[in-house]
Picture 1 (tube, rainbow, N blue to C red):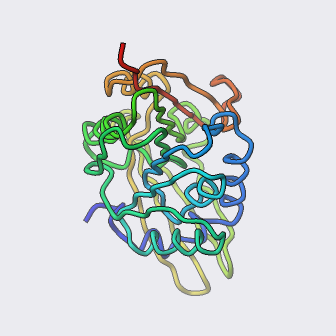
Picture 2 (picture 1 turned 60 degrees about the vertical axis):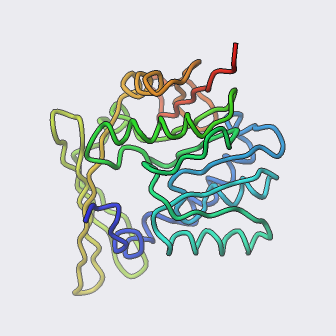
Length: 248
């Protein structure tokens, strides 16, 4: 079993992955970021939507949203979030390496470092190609992740995150000459400890930009914050946006 297929990671470490702060931040991005100023009623695909942190506010802002994820439990939580907000979204259980709906969306988003999961680089490129095929001409893909440059500024030092009744200790290991990394997490509560790990590709801005072009995108841009700031020494994230060409 690959790590991303292990529901123990997503449910057992839910307090770290799916925090109220992240939910509030996602809602704020959808409400105010110029990168999310989509035309009213846009058809949006949320790849690896998880518990719906972006799915729900996108639907609340009047967009027609489809969330895709591999895990039914996470999709159930996304459905509950949409129901609580009084909005509707289409939720699909699927692997993003397989989910393609030709010309069906105006926007595809892939948020919170939900890109780079697959051990084969070509599978990660396939996710971009599927997004390109699924976009209508003139549509945009937005990918948000922790880039190689930003990750390098703090990787290597163990980190501790407090959770209810305990803590999570996180330790990173760089693999394959900075092509990938492994993160080991240990949740400690009282005299009990649970462990999990995940391995991802880590891409630089130049590498991901080249992948966008290889997947067929034009007008590829890089940003360093979710409010559209420049990708420079002050960047906290890497956000890459590319367009599917209109017929000429």
